[in-house]
Amino acid sequence: TGATGIRGLSEYAYIYNLAAEVVALEADITYSNNGVIVGAITHAPGTSQIIIGTPGDYAVWFNEAGVEPNQFTLFQNGAPVAGSTYGSGAGTQPNPGMVIVTAAAGDILTVRNHTSTAAVTLQTLAGGTVTNANASVLIEKLSS
Image 1 (spheres, rainbow, N blue to C red):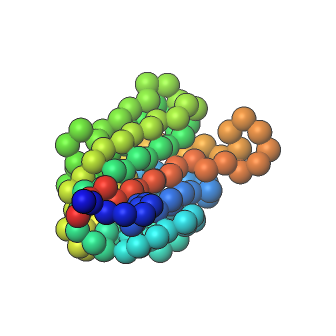
Image 2 (cartoon, rainbow, N blue to C red; image 1 turned 60 degrees about the vertical axis):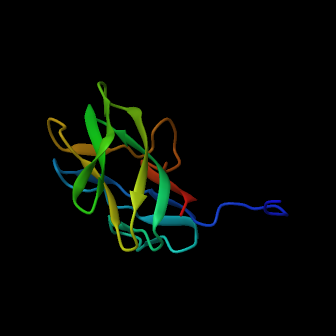
């Protein structure tokens, strides 16, 4: 007969950066702030590592606003995730990426300035006078 009632996502997280940051080549982005985090996903503000606490399949969206042309990649336990390198050929424009990963409990996700030609400055005050999120990660658990 199936499940009854309304069911939503069991785990999700929004993590973002408001700080001025220059991301060195082959370095991970550090995220200054946590938004809503539900479930066993963890992140300490001011660090780069996002830790998955429950095994399963996760949709991961990430976005960066770099001043320079760039490429960013999602890494899982220190290795690049296949299909997760996204690039921006011109500076001062968003560079969004998305991928689905299968994660074990304790897996570590980071977003790295990977295969760019140089360091990337994350843009603050883009288009106005209020500090903008210059990097963000949105994670949703899809299944166990």
